[in-house]
Length: 109
Image (cartoon, rainbow, N blue to C red; front, side, top):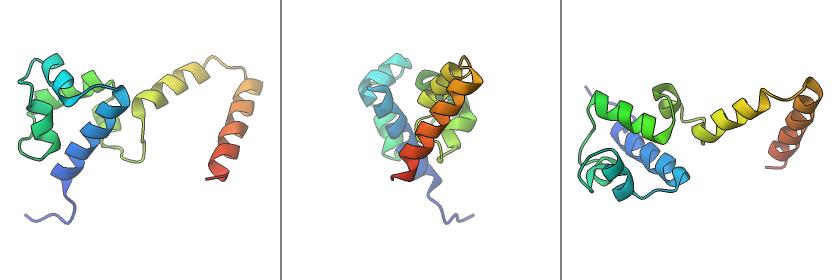
């Protein structure tokens, strides 16, 4: 079966982006997962692919759900989760203010 989209490449790119947002090196992440120091580097460079359990451990380490990992429209899933959690404590008026700020910021881009 031939795919028009390079899913393996996207997978590695996504791990790299989320890892960089977390502020850790590929080596640090690999070792934290109990793997060889080049494990994440090999995934990011399309030389290997994790098992399903390896993928789950990667998601846990990156603090994202598997669904968030594959939702490429969410650039920073861990920060979005933190933002949503913090926003849930706001009053309706405060929520409206924050929402207006977000609309103003995104309108300027």
